[in-house]
Length: 363
Ligand SMILES: Nc1ncnc2c1ncn2[C@@H]1O[C@H](COP(=O)(O)OP(=O)(O)O)[C@@H](O)[C@H]1O
Ligand SMILES: [Mg+2]
Image (cartoon, rainbow, N blue to C red; front, side, top):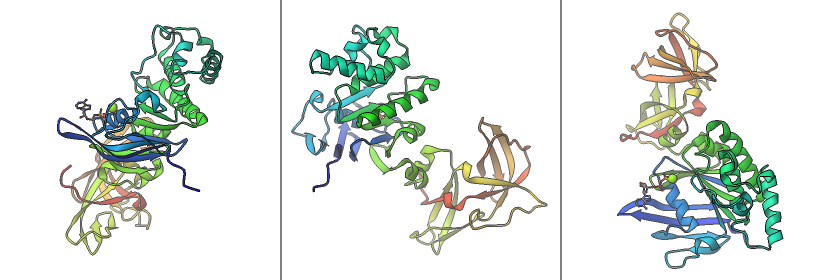
């Protein structure tokens, strides 16, 4: 049996505006029922990618397939409404002059009773059946959002494209609506490409994250893998605050105040960045100028003095000026930990949570 086709596949998509390459050789595939998040900073080309897949913009090169069938290349093009692709954008408003029922039924072409049944099923599922005859202005923002989701899903699209769909909602509503939306998308078995610039949203929603930067996909993988095996320093920094120390390589090793780090494949004399997150720094009190003993997991401790400590809610963020080079490193500590400025302390770093990358001089 031939391997099944991905539900959505894009190959080598490129788009230029006024000579600037905004989407640069992007390839992606999404399996049936999976949620992929296209995650990257504002302006990196996410919406442009989505617009080409939807068919409202045209690529300069590259192909788009749905279930193995060509939807668009640079000569052939199926119009947007015949691609079996649902769209949900932040500003994709409901039709104000149509009832909720007619909004949700908008893309349906069954009989009246079939359409009514599908509309009722979806409205019931999102808990809004009682609003079936209401007009959009009678609904709250969150309710309108759920109607928009029902409308997009009503024709059973093979693929849903969602462009920052939750960014117009206030924080308190957002988590709940995200979770409900995800549950419904999974029930319907729709494949989803969701665009976001928020790492937490991607971690919460995605089976797979495609990390995008300056028009290119720099890394793809499950959220766990992207977070714990990042491709480069910027990929670490996109998800959290980071600490960076630099070292020079000698014999595939670099010596630092926190002990030796492996730098396999890096030539002698080259500089490397050792990157780690504040939550992987642990701290110990100074005992007459001595710190904890080195261990295989925590490496060698290095001493610094507290420069600043702030309470952040679920954790405290403490900044240390290191004795060895005066650099500032950050540690987070659960709950309340607000040592006095100037207190000497010892920092150790979870070695299995350190990432070693060739140093980039341009930051
Ligand atoms: N129609 C257009 N004409 C010219 N430049 C555009 C057009 N659409 C997008 N761009 C530019 O392409 C880049 C990527 O935009 P976009 O895909 O909207 O990024 P994102 O959604 O990741 O924030 C931006 O620099 C933007 O200004
Ligand atoms: Mg955008």
